Amino acid sequence: MAGAASTRGTEEGFAGGDARAAIAAIDVDGTLFSDRAAQDVFLRILRTTGLLSRAAFARLVGVYVLHRLRLIDPVKARLRGLAMLDGLPLAQAEPLADRLAGELLATVHDDARAEIAALQARGLRVLLVSASLGLVVSRLADGLGADGYLASELLVVDGCCRAAFAGPVLEGPQKWLALQRFADERCGQGGWELSVAYGDSADDVALLDHAQRAVAVNAQRKLARTAARRGWARVAWH
Image (tube, rainbow, N blue to C red; front, side, top):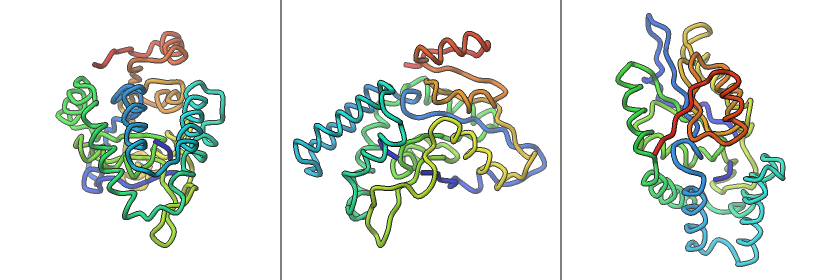
């Protein structure tokens, strides 16, 4: 998934009230489902859509590999990935997003679904927070019954997708900044707290660092080291 920042969410889920809103933030790729599952679904759908020539598909796979290995700036990698959508009518992109989200929902860890249900039963508002495109993340949030989402947003001009973002890409610290803006706008400054955050990689550290409880899920090596140093919880979701 490639993806600029959404501040959209379920408004009634973040309406004001007498008590401070307790928020749970959950990363998407690598946390809700494995990176490998996301890669397999994404590439399989691309192969069957006819959007890419064989050469363009090979280039995209190369960019994806460089991104996963952290050998290319992540924002640049996402921009290159958007090239395949340039000029595509939004009316054609949306069914692709439906299909992609539908297949990804089938790969969501059972433990993740159970955790979301448990958090909401305790009165927390669950937000999905991802650098991936809001076009897909919004559908994942709906499918999982989350209270809202924050994601990178695709630029759409005159009903067509462009190879650009409509705002900041939610990589690293931008996840926390986007959540701050989102919650302040809906609950007021001081009217909310980040009770718990979940992530799988070093890209999630800024978000985890601001949570009252940080949980490293199926943590990649760098995040695992950080979690050990800071005493964060570590869990394995299946």
